[in-house]
Image 1 (cartoon, rainbow, N blue to C red):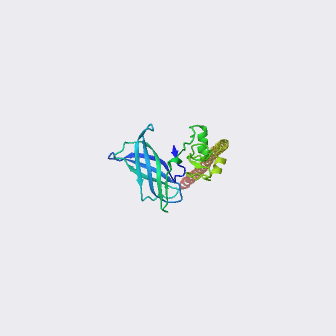
Image 2 (image 1 turned 90 degrees about the horizontal axis):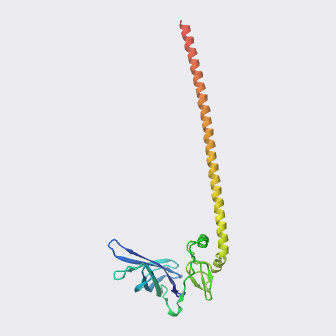
Image 3 (image 1 turned 30 degrees about the vertical axis):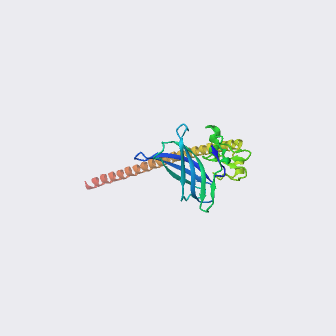
Amino acid sequence: MLMDLTCPVEFCGVEVLRDSGGRAQAYLTFLNLTDDTVTELHAMVTMLDAEGVSMGLRPLRYRRLSALPHAQFTLCMVMDDLPFFLDARVTIQRVGFDRGAAWEWDENALMDCTPKLLAPGPQRVALVAIAGPDSVCWPERRRDTWVCVCGRFNQRTWKSCKRCQRDREDTFARYELDNVMALYQQQQNRQILEEREERETELAHRQDTRTRRQEDFVDLWLLMRSRKRVFWMVMTALALIAIGLRAWLK
């Protein structure tokens, strides 16, 4: 992926959709990397098929934008006269700001900014668990750049990542391979301990509930037994009274 690191806007991705009438439109999402509002964007879109093969180029020019600082914004690309593509590469050529200044690309400043993505596996799982779902590679220092865990290339002098705002020194200190694996193991151990405590708590709760039910059953049984005894005492007394009245009447 060729990129000018000084570009103030970053292309994030594209989604191509069809409406109920079959008309296709592409929605291009960008990230404003600056502290200023973006008001203008010129770009060249390379449309790609499912295999990543170019299906043609399309220049785009957007004016009267209001893309807020350090926020994503999405632009619509009408496809009435274009093939139905699935992915895209975008070269940003000009960015205008509300403060009046503008950035323009320098073809000589383009460089390969393809990160060394981690393959699915234990290391990728550990990195995502510790660094977050946007992490895709180990941080790396190069001659003139450094690569953040989010995959963004940054100039060597930048103290934080232009994309995710992670601090440079903290990134290299926290997300080094051995440290990440150790932190992940600690996280797993805590999770196992918490799950064990939850099971023990649930077991104790069930045992307590069972004990209370047994105690309630015994209390009810004693109450019913007591009521039954009282009932028969009353019935016996009434019978004796009846016998006595019958003898007296004779």
